[in-house]
Each structure stands twice: as C-alpha cells, then as structure tokens.
Image: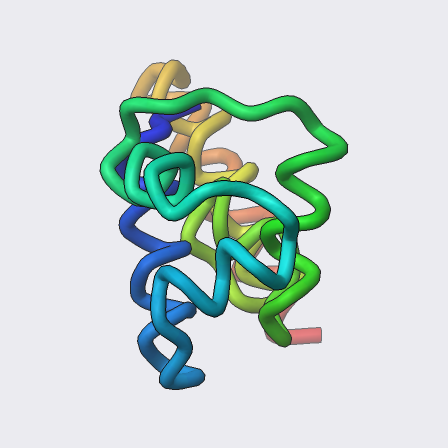
Length: 104
C-alpha cells in the first residue's frame, strides 16, 4: 500500500468538505500531529483507525486505497493490473473476447 497516496487522498477529501486538520482530529479522537503524519504518508494506521478516518467522507474505501470512486472503476483497475503480466498473444485473445462480449 502506498501510504503517501492514501494520505494525499485523505487530505484532498478533508479539504473538499472544508474541514480543518483540527476538526478532523477531534472527529476521530486523535491529535493534529497524527492527522498530519497520516496525510503525509509518514504514519501507518490499523484497519480500525482507517475505517474511522474514511467514515468521515462520502467515498468508498477503494477511493483511498486505489484512487477509484466506484466499484466498477475498482474492477477495471483489477483487470488492468492482471493484464500487465500477459504476453501479447494472450492479450490479443482477451481483447477479442471483450469485444465479442461488449458487442453482443
């Protein structure tokens, strides 16, 4: 997991709802220093704390981890990640299958 990217997404989400670091820290019961460390990727957090952090925002967990806003985007990213290790012949076969499925 890239904690720097996750932290950037948390900071962006916090600013979108016009919440200060102080307000955010108070909302989840931590220090402002902790929030700063999370937002800069210097602090790792457990799943419970991560859930508390992202529950403040109206975004799916996948947005913070993968940068995707919807389950569909998450699935597309998973498929894309799988395709990076496929040779060209298999990739062309996969493309033909996808085209056939989409056209029907």
